[in-house]
Image 1 (tube, chains in turn yellow, green):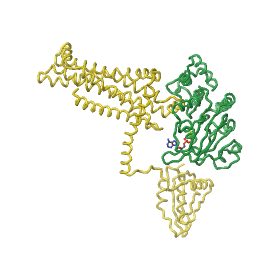
Image 2 (cartoon, rainbow over the protein chains, first blue to last red):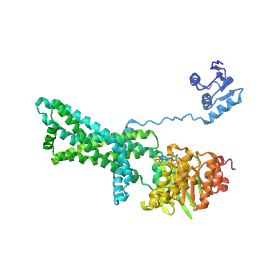
Image 3 (tube, protein in one colour):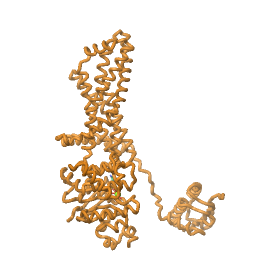
Image 4 (cartoon, chains in turn purple, orange):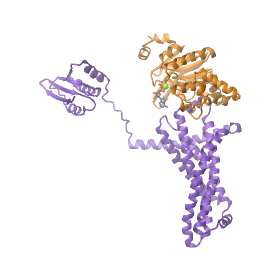
Amino acid sequence: MNVTSNLEILKTKDAIELIFKGSFDVFNISTIEKQLSSLRLTNECNNIIVDLRSVESIDTSFALLLSDCKKRAISSSLKFEILSNDETFKDVVELTYRNSHIKSSFEIEKIPFFENLGRQTIKNISFLREISLFIGTIFVHMFYYLNSYKNLRIKEIFFEINESIFKAIGIIALTSFLIGVVVAYQSAVQLKQYGANIFIVDMLGLSLLRELSPMITAIIVAGRSGSAYAAQIGVMKITQELDAMRTMGFDPYAFLVLPRIITLMIMMTVLIFVSDIMSLLGGMLIAKIELGIEYSLFIDRFREAIDVRHFFVGMLKAPFFGFAIASISLYQGLQVKNDTQSIGINTTRSVVQSIFIVIIIDALFSILFTSLGI
Amino acid sequence: MALIEVKDLITSFDSKVVHNGLNLEINEGEIYGLLGPSGCGKSTLMREMVMLEEYTSGSIKVLGYEINAIRSKEAQKLRKKWGVLFQFGALFTSLSVSENIALPLKEYTDLSSKIIDEIVSFKLSLVGLKQSDAHLYPSQISGGMNKKAALARALALDPKLLFLDEPTSGLDPISAREFDDLILKLKDMFNLTIVMVTHDLTSINNTLDKMAIIDNKKIAVQGDLNSVLNTSSPFIDTFFKALK
Ligand SMILES: Nc1ncnc2c1ncn2[C@@H]1O[C@H](COP(=O)(O)OP(=O)(O)O)[C@@H](O)[C@H]1O
Ligand SMILES: [Mg+2]
């Protein structure tokens, strides 16, 4: 059936007649909406007559247009009348009339720019307060639980060590090796020009042990374990597993937070050690290929030029980096709200903030070590 | 004896007031229902009773402990005396069904793993799960089984007090009626006190000794089914239409 649905508006002496023909539904009423809204209801007439006698079917959105019309009519004190062969049409219009709220707008109110700026600033400042609170809570729990080794959840810690660390050794070894290769290659080109070939050992030893290995390791661990922690805790929060733990008396700090923090503090040390070895191996390889420095010569020079303290400077950073990454990621996981979107947001934040904090800690260490002359 | 006493409770989230001066008492051995329209704060009230949510003012006493001023040792004692069933089960997804049920036993008792296994398999059959379901993980079981397993976990330590949030929602009608029977059986055998949020009329009719209707941020009526039916309010009239 091919009906053209249309509206004809007739103005008679004391009435406006709206004559509808055809079927009306949400897909074809846009022109009608325009026609109706441009219709002026003046006091010249005192009747609105809606003629639905040649209408085959209507839906609620069409009925809403009519009830809008009815409201306007009533507010300018006109009579509103529907002519129809089908009683249900009138019922539908009546239903929509009773349930329509003209003023409702479901758009969330836009916050003015300066108000928004203020809110965001306060939010960011209170983030500092909250993360300090969280770190404080971690320490309280540490002292509370670590007064007896029995409270330490050894099983969880070993599980985490296996899960988040041993599986990371491969990628860390490979990345560190490549970093060693890249740094050595870049410096080799420069050093060759001055014939200072042997100094590549000093250069690699210092930069890799003190800065690059700890940094690369921290970045990979933040991306790998940090995001995993945040997402995992976040999902546990959404599925109410955390609530279930709390009501059963299993403190999430003891079961989830502390084991992960301790794990990362221990294993960051191991991983940085692995990274030191692998990146130096990469450097040695390039030193031989590019500069013709034999392995034995490399090692001799290394013993002479690189003091063991440089190694310890790098290793000392490990527990701090581990603590920072784990606590920020766990904090972000616990901040997840009851929606899936916030898992994504908080996981991203956990990685970005961990890396950021790691760089800040690294900078602080640099200043400290320089002023101490180490 | 009143196991739970709520006095002049006020709860608000930011500017939204959920409870405003709410009072109720739950006695030992009762099956007590919290009823009311959606969003009236039933789950929130229950979360406050189990110390998951903080309230703004007023007082809640559970088993004699004032829970706003409770010390962490006492809170821990309290947590071993109750079982909580969450609306969607909240099983630990990294553990199998049997490990979920065994977890509180392993953590809080020195029982041998043989006895623990026996307790687990008893609890499984008590809630109507098959022994062969025990090794499945929460992701491998249906919603109804998930609820039953969560109930078995809540019952693991034989608590005196049981909190249930919409226990029969999402269950098939047969399981739902079995659930009612189970709750009555538990109450008769162990003198359990049960607090539950429910919308299931049959379940209300079959199991509840007493109920409170929360409406307009307060308790509209508290009492047994008859006294509730004799009160009139828009919510009661519509909700209990079938029973009136
Ligand atoms: N964390 C929260 N933040 C803000 N509002 C909340 C929060 N939790 C619950 N509410 C509000 O409290 C009211 C009661 O919720 P709830 O107790 O879940 O209702 P129900 O009675 O259906 O279980 C709802 O209106 C809800 O919007
Ligand atoms: Mg609820």
